[in-house]
Image (cartoon, rainbow, N blue to C red):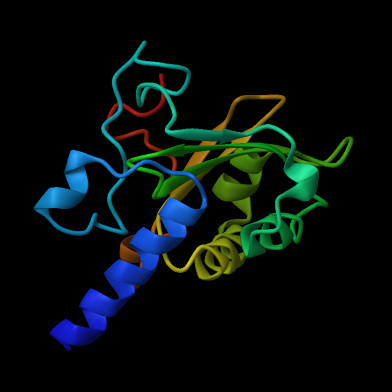
Length: 165
Protein backbone atom coordinates (compact mmCIF):
# COMPACT_ATOMS: atom_id res chain seq x y z
CA UNK A 1 0.00 0.00 0.00
CA UNK A 2 2.76 2.46 0.98
CA UNK A 3 4.76 1.65 -2.15
CA UNK A 4 1.71 2.34 -4.34
CA UNK A 5 1.18 5.68 -2.64
CA UNK A 6 4.85 6.57 -3.01
CA UNK A 7 4.69 5.75 -6.73
CA UNK A 8 1.60 7.93 -7.18
CA UNK A 9 3.20 10.81 -5.28
CA UNK A 10 6.35 10.53 -7.41
CA UNK A 11 4.29 10.39 -10.61
CA UNK A 12 2.40 13.51 -9.53
CA UNK A 13 5.63 15.32 -8.67
CA UNK A 14 7.10 14.44 -12.07
CA UNK A 15 3.93 15.54 -13.87
CA UNK A 16 3.92 18.86 -12.02
CA UNK A 17 7.60 19.39 -12.81
CA UNK A 18 6.97 18.60 -16.48
CA UNK A 19 4.13 21.15 -16.46
CA UNK A 20 6.51 23.78 -15.12
CA UNK A 21 5.04 23.95 -11.62
CA UNK A 22 7.85 24.74 -9.16
CA UNK A 23 8.53 22.39 -6.28
CA UNK A 24 7.88 24.03 -2.93
CA UNK A 25 8.66 23.47 0.70
CA UNK A 26 5.09 22.21 1.12
CA UNK A 27 6.14 18.95 -0.53
CA UNK A 28 8.87 18.46 2.07
CA UNK A 29 6.19 17.68 4.66
CA UNK A 30 4.68 15.00 2.41
CA UNK A 31 2.16 14.90 -0.38
CA UNK A 32 -0.63 17.49 -0.38
CA UNK A 33 -4.16 16.51 0.59
CA UNK A 34 -6.14 16.06 -2.64
CA UNK A 35 -9.38 17.10 -0.89
CA UNK A 36 -8.11 20.24 0.84
CA UNK A 37 -9.15 23.66 -0.39
CA UNK A 38 -6.62 26.48 -0.23
CA UNK A 39 -6.84 28.87 2.69
CA UNK A 40 -9.11 31.74 1.62
CA UNK A 41 -8.21 35.27 2.77
CA UNK A 42 -10.21 38.23 1.49
CA UNK A 43 -7.97 40.52 -0.59
CA UNK A 44 -5.10 38.01 -0.88
CA UNK A 45 -4.42 37.85 -4.61
CA UNK A 46 -6.98 37.62 -7.40
CA UNK A 47 -8.97 34.76 -5.82
CA UNK A 48 -8.14 35.08 -2.13
CA UNK A 49 -5.42 32.41 -2.29
CA UNK A 50 -2.38 34.60 -2.96
CA UNK A 51 -0.77 34.69 -6.40
CA UNK A 52 -1.26 31.66 -8.62
CA UNK A 53 1.64 29.23 -9.08
CA UNK A 54 0.85 28.93 -12.78
CA UNK A 55 -1.69 30.48 -15.17
CA UNK A 56 -2.90 29.15 -18.51
CA UNK A 57 -4.35 32.03 -20.50
CA UNK A 58 -4.46 30.39 -23.94
CA UNK A 59 -6.53 27.29 -23.22
CA UNK A 60 -6.89 26.42 -26.91
CA UNK A 61 -3.68 24.39 -26.70
CA UNK A 62 -4.38 23.03 -23.23
CA UNK A 63 -5.22 19.34 -23.53
CA UNK A 64 -6.08 18.27 -19.97
CA UNK A 65 -9.12 15.91 -19.70
CA UNK A 66 -10.81 18.42 -17.36
CA UNK A 67 -11.29 20.74 -20.34
CA UNK A 68 -13.64 18.26 -22.03
CA UNK A 69 -15.40 17.46 -18.75
CA UNK A 70 -16.10 21.16 -18.18
CA UNK A 71 -17.74 21.43 -21.61
CA UNK A 72 -20.32 18.76 -20.79
CA UNK A 73 -22.59 21.30 -19.03
CA UNK A 74 -24.30 23.96 -21.13
CA UNK A 75 -21.34 24.07 -23.50
CA UNK A 76 -19.24 25.63 -20.75
CA UNK A 77 -15.82 26.64 -22.03
CA UNK A 78 -12.67 27.14 -19.96
CA UNK A 79 -11.21 30.56 -20.77
CA UNK A 80 -8.42 30.58 -18.15
CA UNK A 81 -6.93 28.17 -15.62
CA UNK A 82 -5.04 29.22 -12.49
CA UNK A 83 -3.16 26.78 -10.25
CA UNK A 84 -2.68 27.17 -6.49
CA UNK A 85 -1.33 24.96 -3.66
CA UNK A 86 1.94 24.11 -5.44
CA UNK A 87 0.03 23.54 -8.66
CA UNK A 88 -2.37 20.92 -7.24
CA UNK A 89 -5.53 23.07 -7.03
CA UNK A 90 -6.88 24.27 -10.39
CA UNK A 91 -9.31 27.16 -10.64
CA UNK A 92 -11.19 26.97 -13.93
CA UNK A 93 -12.59 30.28 -15.13
CA UNK A 94 -15.43 29.22 -17.38
CA UNK A 95 -17.71 30.98 -19.86
CA UNK A 96 -21.22 29.58 -20.08
CA UNK A 97 -23.08 29.28 -23.37
CA UNK A 98 -24.95 32.48 -24.21
CA UNK A 99 -28.22 32.83 -22.27
CA UNK A 100 -27.63 29.63 -20.28
CA UNK A 101 -28.59 29.31 -16.62
CA UNK A 102 -25.99 30.38 -14.06
CA UNK A 103 -23.96 27.71 -12.27
CA UNK A 104 -25.11 28.93 -8.86
CA UNK A 105 -28.78 28.64 -9.82
CA UNK A 106 -28.17 25.16 -11.21
CA UNK A 107 -26.31 24.11 -8.05
CA UNK A 108 -29.15 25.31 -5.83
CA UNK A 109 -32.03 23.98 -7.97
CA UNK A 110 -30.56 21.19 -10.11
CA UNK A 111 -28.16 19.65 -7.60
CA UNK A 112 -28.13 16.08 -9.03
CA UNK A 113 -27.23 17.37 -12.50
CA UNK A 114 -24.47 19.59 -11.09
CA UNK A 115 -23.15 16.73 -8.97
CA UNK A 116 -22.84 14.55 -12.09
CA UNK A 117 -20.93 17.40 -13.77
CA UNK A 118 -18.70 17.88 -10.75
CA UNK A 119 -17.95 14.15 -10.55
CA UNK A 120 -16.95 14.12 -14.24
CA UNK A 121 -14.54 17.00 -13.59
CA UNK A 122 -13.21 15.31 -10.44
CA UNK A 123 -12.56 12.12 -12.39
CA UNK A 124 -10.81 14.06 -15.17
CA UNK A 125 -8.74 15.84 -12.52
CA UNK A 126 -7.63 12.52 -10.93
CA UNK A 127 -9.80 13.18 -7.87
CA UNK A 128 -8.06 16.42 -6.88
CA UNK A 129 -10.15 19.29 -5.51
CA UNK A 130 -10.90 22.11 -7.93
CA UNK A 131 -12.90 25.28 -8.33
CA UNK A 132 -15.08 26.63 -11.14
CA UNK A 133 -15.68 30.36 -11.54
CA UNK A 134 -18.33 31.75 -13.87
CA UNK A 135 -16.57 34.40 -15.97
CA UNK A 136 -19.70 36.57 -16.15
CA UNK A 137 -21.14 36.40 -12.62
CA UNK A 138 -17.98 35.48 -10.66
CA UNK A 139 -20.00 32.74 -8.92
CA UNK A 140 -17.55 30.27 -7.41
CA UNK A 141 -18.11 26.56 -6.90
CA UNK A 142 -15.51 24.41 -5.15
CA UNK A 143 -15.54 20.62 -5.29
CA UNK A 144 -13.70 17.70 -3.77
CA UNK A 145 -14.12 13.96 -3.53
CA UNK A 146 -14.46 13.92 0.27
CA UNK A 147 -17.79 15.75 0.08
CA UNK A 148 -19.14 13.19 -2.39
CA UNK A 149 -17.89 10.36 -0.18
CA UNK A 150 -19.91 11.79 2.74
CA UNK A 151 -23.12 11.80 0.72
CA UNK A 152 -23.05 15.59 0.31
CA UNK A 153 -23.13 17.61 -2.87
CA UNK A 154 -19.77 17.50 -4.65
CA UNK A 155 -19.80 21.29 -4.75
CA UNK A 156 -19.26 23.56 -1.76
CA UNK A 157 -20.69 27.00 -2.31
CA UNK A 158 -18.59 28.16 0.61
CA UNK A 159 -21.37 29.99 2.41
CA UNK A 160 -20.47 28.46 5.77
CA UNK A 161 -16.71 29.05 5.89
CA UNK A 162 -16.14 32.59 4.66
CA UNK A 163 -15.69 31.67 1.02
CA UNK A 164 -18.50 33.81 -0.40
CA UNK A 165 -19.14 37.40 0.61
